[in-house]
Length: 318
Image 1 (cartoon, rainbow, N blue to C red):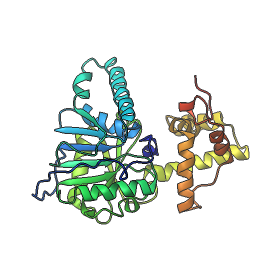
Image 2: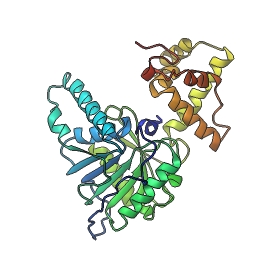
Image 3: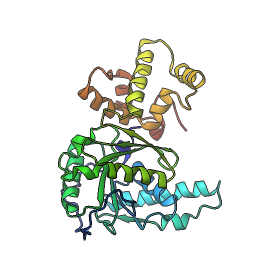
Image 4: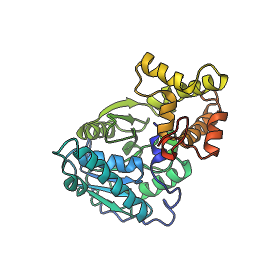
């Protein structure tokens, strides 16, 4: 959940000082297309995870380019992907780490290797104006490319608002992956009012080609998973703040009583409490009836306790 917030470490640069490459586009209009080339913008957990999952699925694509605003972020992404693959290889000797890594190109420029049957996936930070500015530039860069699909990996912001400057609305949609991308099987394909059936079919085929399962949803708050998950976690926090039960007892109850792999507090620690706080703020602004403000979350975040990634949240981690 909330995966795009974990995507890129930089919140600036997209559409300001960043170089947007010139694309040589084919003039032929394609209908439902088979994705052959990819450009992933943002090299954080989500961007690198999407790149890894796509490359790991086999030689289905002619090129996979992952882009970020600085080389340091790209170096971290490359190290992260390689480490993930080496861990997987220890359990499955058939995985060829070098071959998979060789399918991914890391670049500081927003420039695909080819615009033929190109899928562009945005996976940068969840800041609306930054995303809007990026898609404004992408729309201009690929305005003469009829066989390019633009997709946002947002988990909390309206796809319609993000793509307000997109000119070819029929080739724009949401493609929401879940973290960790290489392991999570689900992808929510968000079909906007103006998204063409051909674009939707192309995205469904892409999701299937990388071994994942798609579900179709409208551009509603939280789509499917987060729309159900956020109020659930908010209620768990309210139970804790009222003193109805402890963190551990609530988690144990949901794991053993409802069959969940993680309880709500374990999940929030895994996602990152700073991320949870940001998403809650977005949701409360859109619809105050959905989420309640949390004093406990604020206190933990203000103290630098973000969950598993910082070593402490609702639980302590070695």
